[in-house]
Amino acid sequence: MVISPKNKIRLPKFIEIDDHKVTFVTDFKLLGITIDDRLNFRKHISNIIKKVNPKLYLYKKLFYLPLSVKIQFFKSFILPYFDYCSTLIIYYPKYTIQKIHTFYYTCILKLFGFCFVNQTCEDAETFLNKYKLESLEYRIFKRLGLFVHKIVDFPYSPPGLKNLLKDKSCRHTYNMRATDRFIVPKMNTSFGDATFINFFSRFANLVLSDMICLPEGEFGDSFNKDLNKFFGIFKKNFDWLTLDFGVSYHNTFI
Image (cartoon, rainbow, N blue to C red; front, side):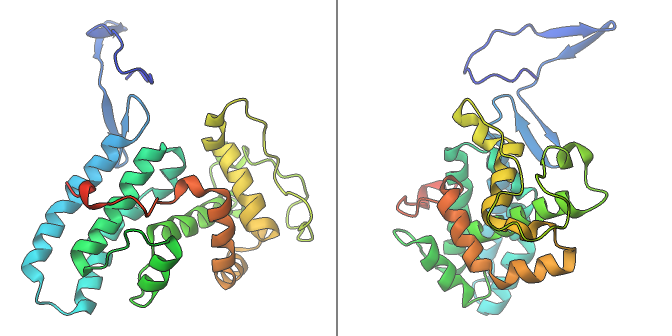
């Protein structure tokens, strides 16, 4: 697969490696994630929509079920598609982020009749909390926090990722609120904001602060205790990962 941002690029039909003919593909699936030759993940999101839509169609035959059963149906058979490898969202372009967010709320609309067009993320979160549900932004935020904590603190986390987060301080030193814990590299282009090292260094500094290196149990308690405060910081500094609720999401239901 040749990765290029251009729409059209001339390629031979195949290349030869040790007398073996290797053909070109425009996308392939790796551990359940569809990677395309433009790295925009549009095909991956389209595949999620194609898998979820039949389940939404099946739901129409279950309209007589009580709300509690519908919510369990949503959590068991639909949410896992949105949750799986959701931390990859930092690499999605804005239109792909918009598509996955809007389809999530389309599912909410189809399943429960809850519509959030022209409402804020806070309004959606407050409303969904009454039914023990969460906005997609909230779910992704929590997964990003747990993901970077595991990379920093777990002894067996991938060293290739762990080494990218350059810690300024000695490990498990907690009086660092006035300074950034991780070095954020300077990027020459805006594309650098979405790289692993840049995003998670800034995320850890701005959102998790000194809490990042707490042991697992203590981290979970501290993180959940002030979750709403941390979520507000996240939205303020990483607003490109959230949905524009002013956009109608009915058209994304394919």
